[in-house]
Image 1 (cartoon, rainbow over the protein chains, first blue to last red):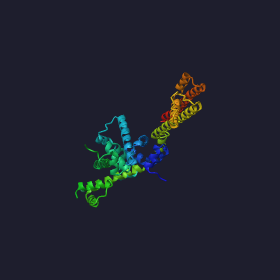
Image 2 (cartoon, chains in turn purple, yellow):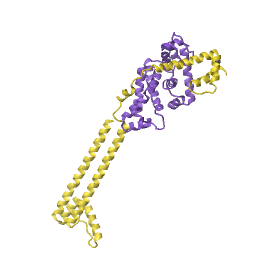
Image 3 (tube, rainbow over the protein chains, first blue to last red):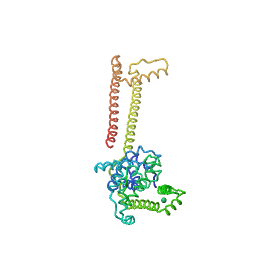
Image 4 (cartoon, rainbow over the protein chains, first blue to last red):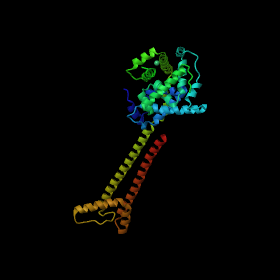
Length: 187
Length: 198
Ligand SMILES: [Zn+2]
């Protein structure tokens, strides 16, 4: 018998941690993929998704039953990733806000687009490029492409209007297209 | 349809929207070289991201997280602590209710046995109903004033067994009080240890 998210949360709040384990296994793939999209590497994605689940566990009694657990989870994971990304950036002493500058520093590939696709070079480049987007653009791309959320779900998770999410996604997609085509972005 | 309109519509299609103008936009991108290149680039982005996602290995996050969690959710521990406190309180109330009943019964028995109110209250002798009420009242009051009864008994020269009984009641009250405190402390300790667990 498969319990609903709300039932699993209720069981966990009554002392059954096994219910939270089931809940995590239901969504760990999507949350991890999203974190990977936000951070661009597997180790950070693993750390961030663990932290996000631990945070959600302790905040479980504040979860509103009328909301979707996954959307709520993405909001927590998004904040965790942004914090982690900021810490990492601080270490690298790079400017966070200069998205265009960051794109210029990104190494381009000598391969043609088709060769890139076949050799996974394109995947590496696009992941690297996504991690250099601004926070809102990165969150939109990570939720849409890596997490598999719809525009409406992203709007709910980020508490932003759907139009803003679309505009972020269009801009980010355009940046990624230019990167893959080897176009150096001019300010 | 111009280039800008075609790209706007195709962007919405890439967002996952159904659009009635999609066919027209695709037709434009097929005919316009620049928009055709633009669309191929957009499709490549989708392919690369999809490919990157598919290549991801999936670590067992749930197992890693479970090792970082306490045995029970804090909210459930708090709920349990409140339940224990309520149970302790109900035990206390039941204990005191039982003590009250015992004292009343003992007081009443003592009154009947000795034939005089052990607290030294005046008794109405005329009617049996009022006498019974007065006797019971005296018994209850007497039961709650064993020390006073003892002193009163000595002062007015009551029978010596009345003094013995009054002293026994004092000792009984002290014992019940100590037992009540012990029960309360025991439950407080359980509540405390649950809090430490958190
Ligand atoms: Zn065109």
